[in-house]
Amino acid sequence: MKIIGIGGEPATGKSSVVQCWALDGEKISEQVITANNGKVIKKTLKQHRVGNLVIFGHYGDDIAMGGTDTLSMSILPAAIQWVRSRANDKTCNYDVIFEGDRLFNSKFITFLKEYPQVEAHFYILQAAEPILNERHAKRGDNQDEIFLKGRNTKYKRLIEQFPDIKVRTNNTMNDRLEIIREILGILGR
Image 1 (tube, rainbow, N blue to C red):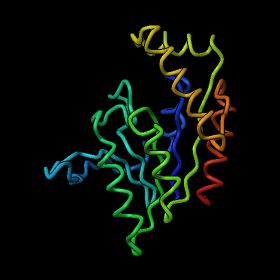
Image 2 (cartoon, rainbow, N blue to C red):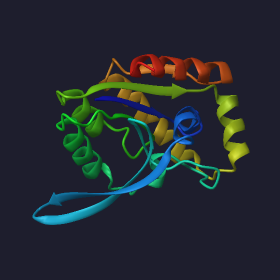
Image 3 (cartoon, rainbow, N blue to C red):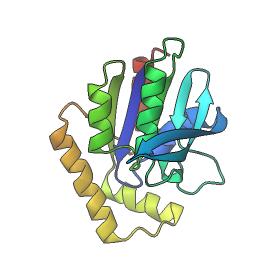
């Protein structure tokens, strides 16, 4: 199982990269059951499926902030359980793409890097400040400066913690296409 994780500050174009696959896929909401301190917990793991490619999160014109932002803040245990059950199933040949804060974190990255049946690749997207400002204005988001600085710090720390994360600039359509081509190469498509 190959898994591609894409992170980055808001407006770096994570969803724009991923929705090129997601919009062609079938929307699915799958119940994943996990256990926590003896309690059984059901979580909905929203996804798109295109053949054997699974994209975590939901995308579409009706969704302002797509991707894993559409998932529960506590989705991580369900995502880990989903990967474990699929990666250990010899009849399952899914590859996965995810982007965004819900899953692009130290705990999930560490799990994926250490899980023997997973070949994981991680990207952090960056964009120039004028581009970020333009994108924030265009989508009309209301994320305050403190939140944005916090995201910046998060991704700087992840780059320090995981030096093999690939950092890519995503300022232009050509940048985006180059990132997509690189991911397609990893997935063998």
